Amino acid sequence: MSTPNSPGGRHAPKPRGPLSGRRTPLRRAFAETLANVNRVLDWLPIGRWLHRRIRRSLVMPELQLQSKQIGKGLDGLRIAFVSDVHAGSFLDENDLCEIFGRIADARPDLVLFGGDLVNTRERELLLFRKPLQMLRPRYGMFAVPGNHDHFWGPDIGLWTAFLQDQGVTVLLNQGQRIEHDGASLWLCGVDDLTEGQPDLPRALAGRRHGEPTVLLSHHPDFFFEAAAVDINLTLAGHTHGGQIRVRGKAPLHHSRFGYEQGWFRENDCCLYVGRGVGVTVLPIRIDAPPEIPMITLRSGVPTSAHLGAIGEASYAADVPAGSSLG
Ligand SMILES: [Fe+2]
Image (cartoon, helix red, strand yellow):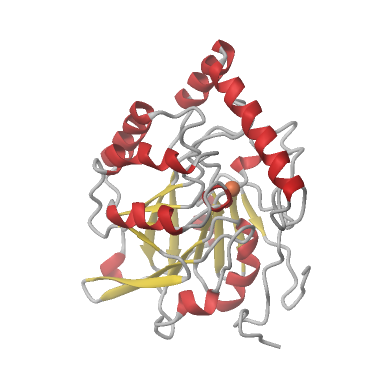
């Protein structure tokens, strides 16, 4: 049965764990301790050396999403998906300018920010002022907040105001239509599942029947809700691909559904979980290099051969419709 917050009859489960849930003094103290460990490691020469290695390993994989719902006018639209920058931890303004220069060179039509722009201080946002001026995609820049963006500020107001002032539209439970040559796309975003109040019905208000839809959600577990209402593509981050992987598995789990990195699919709905750009706590990435995926939308019926080529890791999301882990 549908509820006001789950138009498809499913509600994304809230994350659990020591870094999720209510902002108790104990949780705040734990987060501050981890942030201080992070800052000490950043300051040590070994930390800076490790950060340099991570920056050099940044990849920009070319991916495609094909759907018969995507009109010919938007065939070839290129999206740069930038998540989990965690600026200030090891990325200063010059590093960000270098990375954003690579994004500009890739000539995206849309730049989408998937949350966690800052690491442990609200003022780390200011590091984005100059880099953002380097990007002028034809259909604009859009963002949703992540758990760090919420947690390290008293509220999300300054984060939102800063980005809007820099020409980035914040899709906080909102959507907007992208149109070109008779084709349209509903681009929308929801608030963070851990720290915010995601509201999918509000994000979809205004969507036309059968309109192709791209959803931005920092937390990948929101796909559980999105896949129930025919959202063609959900773009998420948060997991960093596990950040440290051993024998293909991440010891730390960030997704209750196992959405750690890459492509997942449920019926005709796809999820791509980006590994993100930065790191948090430890300046280490093992078998999970940073990435900025470049996703090209294609008009037409996807073939099985095509689906096999769309991502580095295609899985069927094994979630029974109508089930709930909440
Ligand atoms: Fe996150």
